[in-house]
Image (cartoon, rainbow, N blue to C red; front, side, top):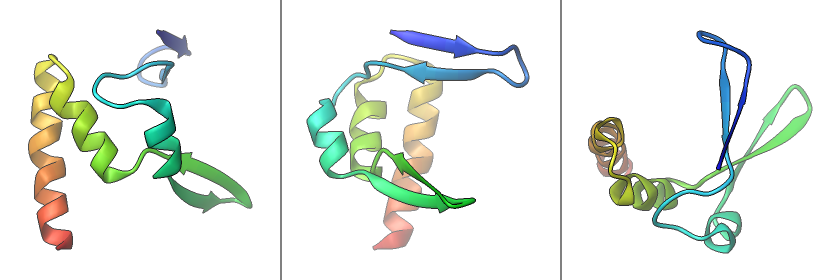
Length: 75
């Protein structure tokens, strides 16, 4: 479920499926950012937290701690 373009340190990974959330949920709650006249959708913070919580990877657990810290500073 991963498409990789390029090589380290300039590799891009496109995930076609992620743990803990469904596409419809992520799409409905996406954030959009305008960059150089392009609109780019991003997964919302709540959905990203759900995804990181469901992931078994150690790196995602570290990311989860930081995302929760960010979420708490926003409240």
